Image (cartoon, rainbow, N blue to C red; front, side):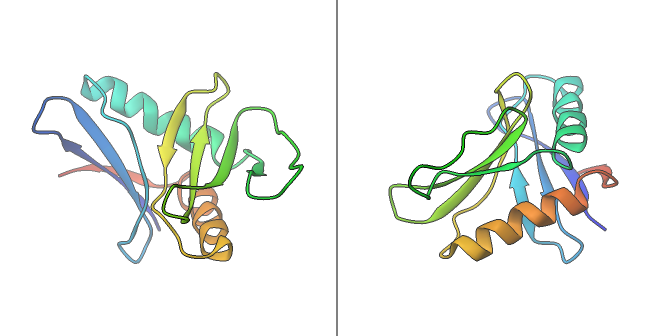
Length: 123
């Protein structure tokens, strides 16, 4: 089972990582000013991830999905990445760079599976 790990940021504020059952980080948040807003970000991921469609922007003529959604794209290094956007189009979680589209899609599937019931812990 996955877990959200909240940590304080040296520059001030809080962020979370969603870790899969094997301990691998599968998604990271932005830096939030307060612990309360960080927890709201987690609640948004838990609510939106399971229902969010995937918009694969690496495919020519891709279908644009409504928010909330996962966007898969290629970064400047040529790696595949995803971001989860909430209903208000704010980015609420991002993934690491993957070398293949399949691995990136597996990351999205892992978030959909792990986020809803993930416990919340602090570092």
